[in-house]
Length: 213
Image (cartoon, rainbow, N blue to C red; front, top):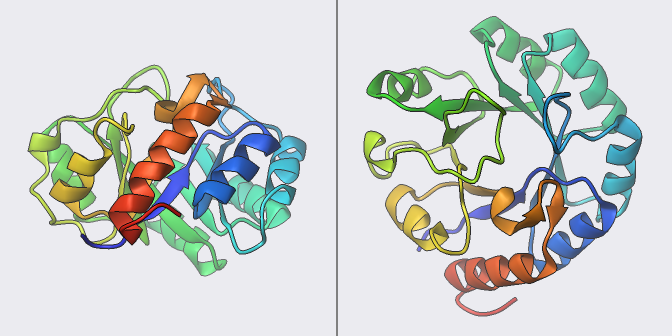
């Protein structure tokens, strides 16, 4: 099975980030969208970042925030990735990339047309998630996997309702570069469950390393 990395998104507590990294998390994600139940302030984000090793990559999630505002946060927190949800143009993405940040462009997949848009992205990585009108990410619902042809997106971040029950199937079908888990390891929005984290990483580590980490 192709090697993949694991991103834990929607972190709101330093201790959850620290545990996730000890278990094998490669990338942490923090949400800066005021309508999200997982919203964190920049000060809390700093404490989350301080709780993990500097080798762990850091992602900020933004929804329809102007590129200059995104860059201010990204620079202040020294993020590695900027994850963009909403109506961002190719120019917007290029502006962020030119400042040295890798861009994850999120697509909420519902129709074949949504998939066709994915294939025109200028971002470093593309994230596929469930389409919802109420929030960006963390819905606990996966998108219609039948819309996307297997193993056709080389720079894929697979999200949308990922949990221990479906991660193996998702990896086998799509061969993603990154698995993005959020609500699938929570006890409530923004609060990660130690038991669910341990179960999830036990499975992921067996899949990518062939043994428990």
